[in-house]
Image 1 (cartoon, helix red, strand yellow):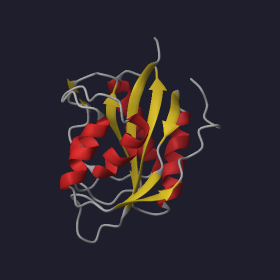
Image 2 (cartoon, helix red, strand yellow; image 1 turned 120 degrees about the horizontal axis):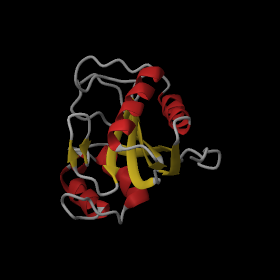
Image 3 (cartoon, one colour; image 1 turned 30 degrees about the vertical axis):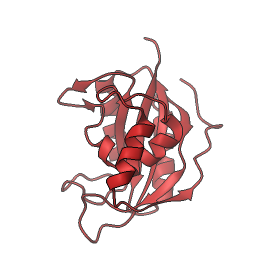
Length: 177
């Protein structure tokens, strides 16, 4: 099976050592025949659709290549989240790690295991800001706009607070598939 590229993940954490949680997630992805091609800066972001006392998130986006099909990939991601210590309780509860598949090339899917592209990515600056940084010219397969156009539209209406927290994780030590 050939490698599929132009796959983007959103990584987020708002419990414990948030930066370390993101680094562990990157490490675990690398162990699963997933090649990280590029990474955005790491942003500190206000919680969205969470309880009022929810801690701030650290968020980043990575571009990957893999031989996995979407359904295989989501199963792998769920296992990684569980291994890192994610406990699924209530919707949008604080979490040690959250890994979402945003885009999988041009695939559009409403499979029960994975919806592609991610259904709420176009509304969320905590996703669009880092995604725009590394994929501004990518065309969203449903609305046919560039990520930059979607980002600029969302910036006009969003009240999210976002600031750069740290530079991207180093890609030089990434394992290849």
